Length: 152
Image (tube, rainbow, N blue to C red; front, side, top):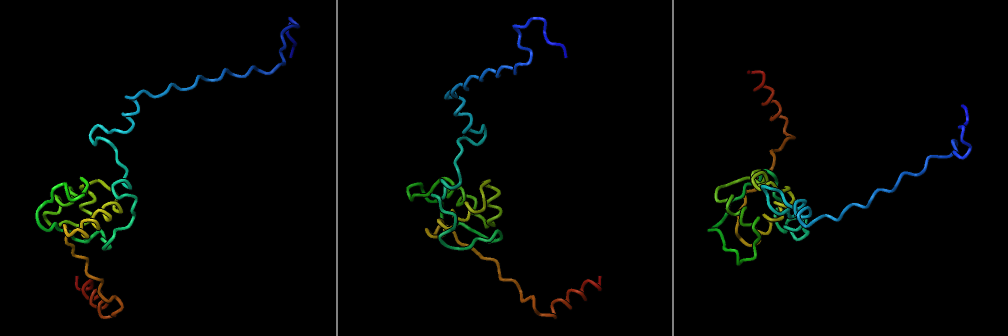
């Protein structure tokens, strides 16, 4: 490579460092509000806020197939229930499974279980736990299934 004609130019010098980018502008109040709002859902509330940080229900195991039904009329808001509790009571005016409640409320299962535990403690819901599995160690059950399949 041929050196430059002008010796004042240092051809072999490293490229100067790129200029540092300007610091980002602080978000405006409107930008901050848009990050925490969803057009259709309104303000975002974290599930652990709804349950006061609890991750397990105070009572009951609440399998996904546990059936839940509201007992009595919908309480007023003075009993210390949150809007999610009241939504569960409204949904459970007819018998509904924990999985269905979770789907309707669009909440995590663990959150719904904690809320159901609260309602069970206060006597606002009643549940029907699933029946335990049949004794699967009985060989007669397997033979009956095989015989039924052969009959098809």
